[in-house]
Amino acid sequence: MKEFLDPHVLIPLAVIVGSLSTVAITLIIVLRDKISNVHVSRTGFEIRTDDVPVWNRIEDKIDRIDSSTCKTIRKATTALMILDIEKNGMSTEAMLINEKANQPLVYAAYENHHTRELDADADAYLADKASDIFAAVRIGETHFPELTEENSNAFACYWFKKVLLPNLRRACVEKVAYYTSQLERSAASNTIKEMLIVRRKKNEKYIKRIDELAVRQDIAEKSSIFYPVQTKRGES
Image 1 (spheres, helix red, strand yellow):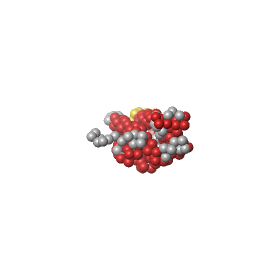
Image 2 (cartoon, rainbow, N blue to C red):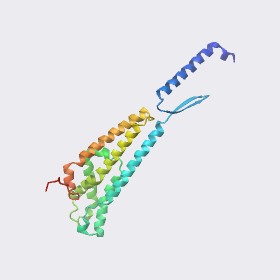
Image 3 (spheres, rainbow, N blue to C red):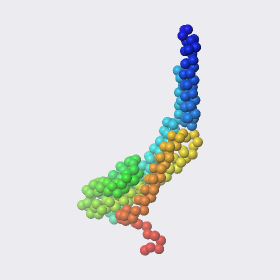
Image 4 (cartoon, one colour):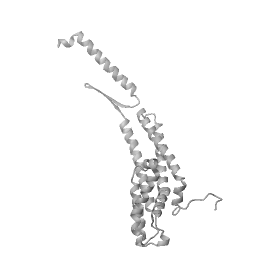
């Protein structure tokens, strides 16, 4: 045990302990806005931050917004009809075709990347949905000659304008408001705030893109078969 009492050994140990203490204090100062708990034991110390649980709560909220949006899009989609019931009646064939036309759009309601696809290429997205609709309803062409590719394209635009865009916009606005509220929390760490800013900017960009698509004349004209273009006051 004598070697441990040697002052030549004790001095380096004191320096090491002091250095470690300095490092620990520095970490606590640097991470002070992130630390939720500091645990000290004989084997050392542990600094715990609350970034993970905070971000998990944020993700849970966003997941709920996305889930609610999916359900709303799905419910609104199932109410659409590619065949006019007043013209064709409530026949089994007509109801079946309406269900088939909606089916690929109902599947699309569960997609959680509408905004990314629309931002990348809205025309390709619409063309894909129109193709899916036509493939689903073409078995009824014999009984319902109006079931053309053009009609399917118009129905896709109708769904796009009446159902998809308004609900996506509402979700993005809700997310922006939520991210803003979390940014205003003084307890949020700088790391969390940086991530929130990125998310908020992304959704603000999506809102701008959705607003551009909502007023596109070509989409409005195509969907007018099902969703008449609203004329401005004073126009005939």
